[in-house]
Image (tube, rainbow, N blue to C red):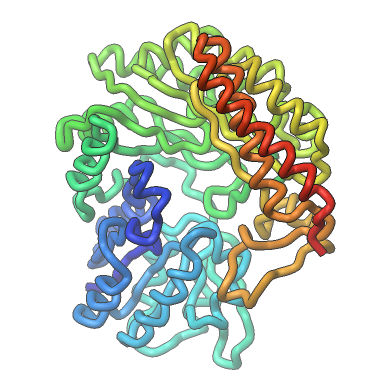
Length: 463
């Protein structure tokens, strides 16, 4: 073995996901594994989703890989730090990648990482893994783009950015054979009656939302060809037989002509599988909605974020509230469910903005919506905007960007009540329209509790 690849997500540590049970394998690692194997690198993949941290420690202690590559994000940071320590105890060089390490590279190096990979990892890791065999050679690492490491004197070195992969069709398909896909399918089928396999059709997002991190795929949008994606779907169907697909693109259907051509390609092959995806309202018109229906789409998730146009403009969402409503209607008329992401607490949000969001949800009537409270991610414009007011509740190794506190913003209890009010008020309206008056009354009572709680906690501000 030349390298062990792993991620820091363990279902055993995520009670909410165990309740929802919609797990997906780590596509990024599987792309990396396939690319390295094609280049002659011997790869082992440890997928922790259905295993435990103790299993990882035992695995590295037994196999003694010379290099361990770990993918880290905001949610898995603390677990990854522990995995780094286990890998070091086993004598491995530790390489970190993913969305979180690039903007905290020095801290990760201080915590014990040998190298941080910035951006897409396939080409970089193919050059890096052989360079980490044997003794430490900073002079060799300095010739590899897309790295952060320390030289012999301890100084932090950042090499030039790695060029992005221009032709995504040149990449091998994800190494799904390296993980237990049937176990994922079984988990989905037990929870939902249908198994799901994920895939991506593109990389990158060209939009400018101030709170969104694009530290891996960047701000470009690169697409695979419709034929190449159709080939992958055929392989997935033939090999695993899932009842559904999940298109894991940042924005599926972002390119209109591509979407229509892809629908035509699957029609030509007689290849249709129900699927869910995330898209943007302004990318959905009559023809795109028809194409989604032809493809078998069951639900589209839209980042609505707010019902206040003022908030959307501050986010630089480049969409109007009315356009979101129009897109939702286009989809629902075709029998496609609409899911919405709603973000509360964006800097400058006022009570009237929250009321506009509730009104928006009542008028749009998404089939389901999820609320979250905004947080600034390092490396984003939103982070820079509030940086002078940020404070960390504890040491870097013990928190993530999700735990950062913005001075002057209402404290967490306020947003707990706000989320309750939004959900209950929208549920009250839905029950009333359906004639479920007892349910409407219960939701109305919950909404009152939310509003009273908001009023009582509004003056509690972060310092």
